[in-house]
Image (cartoon, rainbow, N blue to C red; front, side, top):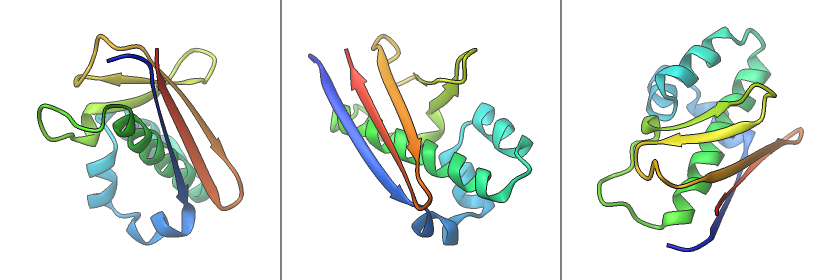
Amino acid sequence: MSKAIGIDIVEFKQILPKLNDKFIKRILSKAELERYNSISNEQRKLEYVSGRFAAKEAYTKIYKKFDKPLNFTEVEVLNDDFGAPYIKSSYRPEDKILVSISHSANYVVAICTKE
């Protein structure tokens, strides 16, 4: 597969009613869940989960389909030493995926590109 791009936008008010343990454990990996649980500010928790959800949706749009059903907990959006997000995934571990996440007062947008 050659270069590809995926983008997703999430409105916070769509995620807020779903923000429970079942949803969070379906979206976040163990490492992401640890980071989520370390956040004390409720708005920041909403932004974190929404950002990860948007990034994982954008990631799926790069490939369109997978050999096996995609489990969001197996696609991790982690942060490097400078705080920049990056994707770690068992689905296509050989692919270099760039990701960017941005928030406003009501939305989060994420974009992924495959080089």
